[in-house]
Image (tube, rainbow, N blue to C red; front, side, top):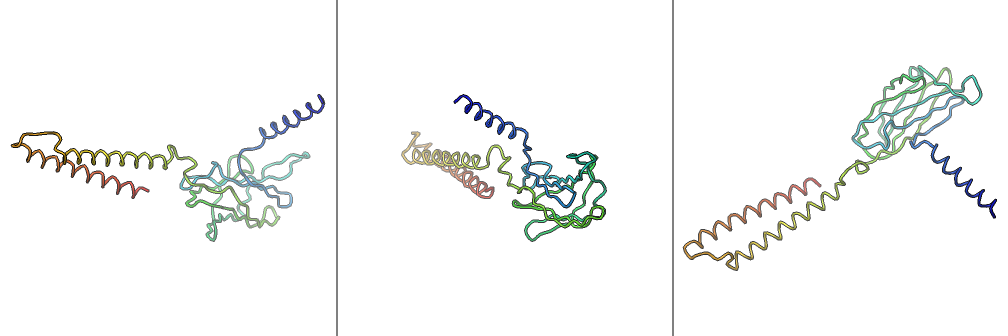
Length: 213
């Protein structure tokens, strides 16, 4: 029984350790013969309308077994195209100071799935691959406070204002506050004028809220 518990805790510990060392980014890696190509976003999650970089890491086996080294100067013979649905755009790839690392600035304008199409040859090896990258998300993943909560607060405030206006109208109709007969006409007209302005302000606020949505 004790041995079983030790084994179970050992497995749990191993899974936790693996989870800790796993990269948190959503890059995609493909292999073309001896080359390893990794593609993804510099800033994750990628958000629509926010400047980002498509980043690439291209390596090949090093001199020792299990090691890799960056491949440099490859985009003189390789074309890169970013793809979204049926839309495509050829992009310029810039070299990072680190060997084998490259990047291309981009502002994603729509949410959804993007990919990079690479065609050409790397030192004589033909490359023709389409590599998906992490989906671009709406600004809701970063918005604070959430726009929905702001809208709810605005609607609540407008409801309270309308309720207050209705109460003032009721009081005015019932004769509150009481005034002398010589002043009642002018006071009534002034009160109606003030309530009209308040009603107009509430209507304008509602229109502005609708347009903002």
